[in-house]
Amino acid sequence: MAKINGNEIRPGNVIEHDGGLWVAVRTNTVKPGKGGAYNQVELKNLINGTKLNERFRSAETVEQIRLDLKDFSFLYAQEDALVFMDTQSYEQLELNKDFVGDRAAFLQDGMMVTVQLYDERPIGISLPDYVTLTITEADPVVKGQTAASSYKPAMLENGIRVLVPPFIGAGERIIVDTNEITYVRRAD
Image (cartoon, rainbow, N blue to C red):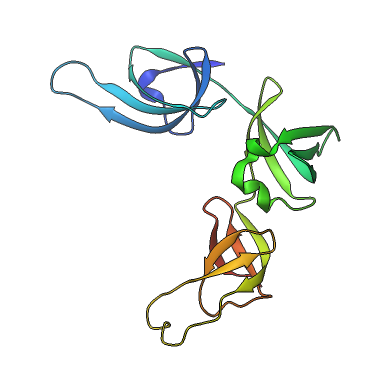
């Protein structure tokens, strides 16, 4: 673990603060007219998700944490658990669906994901940014609505609703952003 000064904290840095693991979400360097400069940092707890605003002066030091990143392959879902396999050691890892959140619906058999580990304990998961899915049902186009950019609701094969342009119909394959849960474009 490396020590860094409080004014060197940047968004994405994982630090140890008050006995917990925190990721810097937003930073703002403040230079008041009176007194020393400080770094206003918005922190998010990696374990329970609570947020905290903290001031760090340049003289303060914090422990920067290095997370291990491992590639896993998604195997299957079993009740409230999702089962992944380490691509190098073939060991299986079982995570609760709540750990992945709403994006668990985008998991497909054999999909490669990256799991963030701290002391061999999973604390985060990254899915691919984009997935290709088939539309199972889409509302018909309403005539006269094509002049303005209008979107219509559509149901994906995984049960999630997204808004798509009017020219997209049922049975078509589209690319969806897994972070924003939005339509990106038609699949080739």
